[in-house]
Image 1 (cartoon, helix red, strand yellow):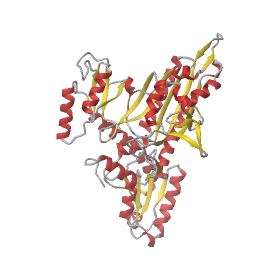
Image 2: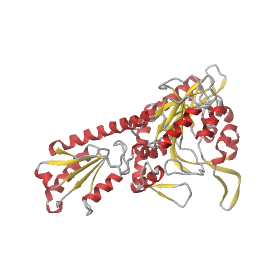
Image 3: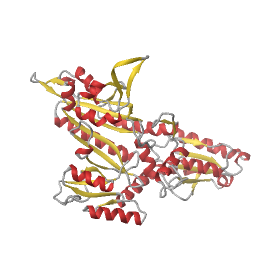
Image 4: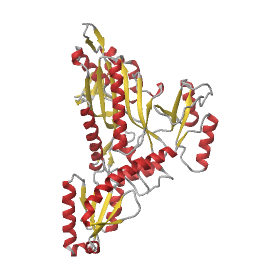
Amino acid sequence: MSTQQNDFTKWYIDTIQKADLMDYTPVRGCIAFKPDGFEIWEHIQEEMNRRFKETGHRNAYFPMLIPESFFQKEKDHIEGFSPELPWVTEAAGEQLEERLALRPTSETMIGHLYSDWIKSYRDLPVLINQWANVFRWEKKTLPFIRTSEFLWQEGHTAHVDEEEARKETMQMLNIYKEVVEELLAIPVYDGQKTPSERFAGAVDTYSIEAMMKDGKAVQAGTSHYLGTKFAEAFDIKYLNKENKHEFVHTTSWGTSTRLIGSVIMVHGDEQGLVLPPRIAPTQVVLIPVGPWKKNPAIMEKLDELFAVLKAKGIRVRLDDSDQSPGYKFNEWELKGVPVRVELGPRDLENNQALMKARDEAEKFSVDLANLVERIEEELNTMQTRLLEKARAFRDLNSHTHVNSMEELKQHLADSTEKEEIPGWILAGWCGDDACEEHVKEETKFTTRNIPFNPPAEKSTCINCGRESKHTVWFGRAY
């Protein structure tokens, strides 16, 4: 298996294949989610859904095929997505009168329908979310992180005014931050995207950005204030309390299965997958060791433990296969199972079991009387520990000392010489698109976001040296 240091991408692909999370299909850029991979997504869905519904949102579903004319109504939108659109041009042996796109996102279809659904201020706000698949024909793909077809949720809301819509935009970004940090144990920087990085057709785009173990960034979630752009394009008006027609203010927001890839890249180690307990398909694996088949009391105890853990809602597996203990240990490590419990004849005699957390090196003994309680404690402790480890790594590789292009190039040269990851840099930006583009051309560092709470304020632009308008995170990204 490749190592993270010598070939991170190869390590990543090896890890997801050995963990049995996905498989390739004959269609370029499209993967099959195996049960463990899909269950991780299900746990993310469950937590997102709970929070969406607590804030008044409801789920709906919209068609996958979108008429080409819909895209023409919002100029920025079609320009942003046209290179990635797959088209359906023929059906039942006949050419279609109008091309149909496989949805890259649903603003246009939903805008068309909202224009019929919304008539009065009494119909607002409209708070709808959709769980769906989308298509963006990617030239360079990486399972979970960037695929031609992927799974996601996309929220689409309509409001009476800008204030209410902007409040919604920030509420959903905060929900994303909470879920990613609390459920996935991934620390993020939240902030606003620069104009060149914002969503096609948005007035403002906000994001949460996560650092992978190779120092690259993943945009882990976005929330967009769309103003009245789509309302004007699709004639979404409502009659206000003064009997006057006004355009609604809309938002959209989304996260996708790239969160699965982020979990792997943030927490995985040289032995393979490491999963935060809250999203692990299997949280605890029980393994009999030694000549356990000659000692029925071992399996009786494990069966009893299995039943108790399952009754508590813990996702537990009992591995009583014929494979050797060493093979089983390795197999469940590769799958990233958070807690392993071993029980053999000598353990039973001593009224104890051996326990190991996936992210720690050493096993430790636990009295059988306290085992269930210790398992529950360890699942909670590991969840917190993974977040703290990831935050420490991110902070160590978030650099605030780089203030010019010369210093950035020196930082990159030093990182290469020392075989260290360059991480991200916090730098000033004057607001000129040309300066942002020049940094990208010279270093492949792109603006990640303008953080709400930067660790420092930068007074000069990293590229031109003029007074900065913004303090920005720069980094290489997936």
